[in-house]
Length: 140
Image (tube, rainbow, N blue to C red):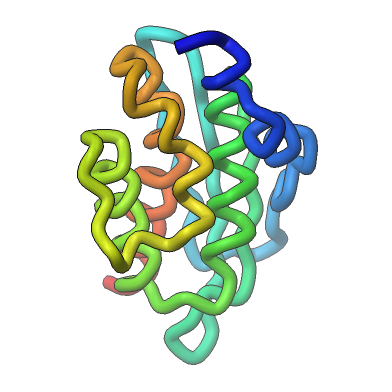
């Protein structure tokens, strides 16, 4: 596994896009998560209307993989139900464990090369875990 495999053009483009970067005014829920081992941190705002995610913003400080994952979370989550958003983290966990299923959203497969580098799994999982926590809180 080379750095070029891990940090491929699609991951670089996601990180550079900064999709969803910022803060929502009046979110339904705001969660913060961090990885104390490497210093990656995300604060995620979520807004629901009619049982669907209609707003999502994040403030992310982290490595390229965390930045890319946060941007993908912002792309995928809009329009989802809280349950669908929570399922994303399970799909990412399965993908990183090397066992993606047929229902794994194709967009998540950009992180398939990370499966070979266990020490970087938490970098990818952090934004998805924040989304799952926010969705669970908003749905409570």
